[in-house]
Length: 291
Image (cartoon, rainbow, N blue to C red; front, side, top):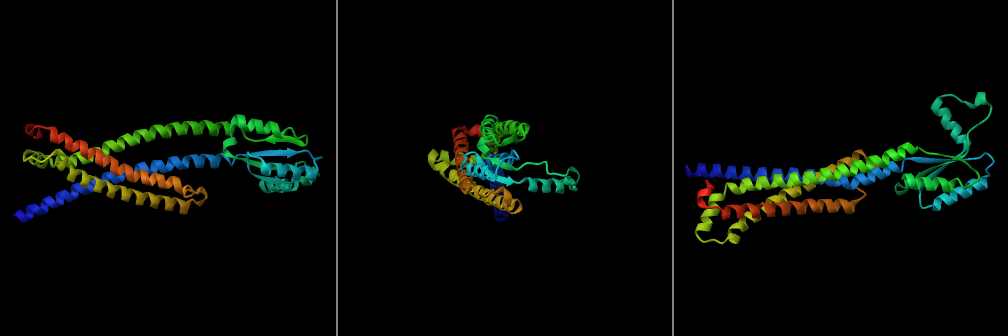
């Protein structure tokens, strides 16, 4: 009979530990995902900005030396990430491929112009910055026109600001929920041992001595949950990298390492604090209040 009861207690204890570890794992995993999203959201936003092209068209009278000189100036320009020179013949071929017929057969000539497609660095894809760049490029007398999607530039910047604000709000909210969930799980675990805590106190054990095994156990459970969360996060990173290699999600290894270390540290910190205050609460209760 005693053996059966011991087995029941052991299963109950294991079940309690498992639920705590699972709670810690899920919460830390979600926090880690949020952290990874935050560090990559800026990169994704910059990548999108840098795909917006500014096309500079040149007069037909522009000589090859003028075009080559302009290209060399772009290579050393601080605002240019990349640029592509498109001849009027290449532009005509691209248009023919798009519309499905050769428009020059009935026009008799190529009305298109030589141009440079410039992709700006993300920091310069702002309303004021891009306007200054446009004004500077127009100082070249051989530049006939400069075309880019001004509405898209404004829309992208406005939406990035809105998304960043909401990310901060959601991050704070989820962090608060995470602390509450882990704290609740550990408080329930400590609650089941409240009579043991009070018994130890009644026989003269100090508060520090009583707290130590509970804090140590909780920290171990926190480490287990954090390690599982880190492994799951690494798995997600590798999966996303294999499916979407163009995102370059593993390029920021330093920031990724900081997020993973933060997950590990939060797992230990929250479990330690929650257990400390939970045991302190039961230590300060009167025996009658335990019921």
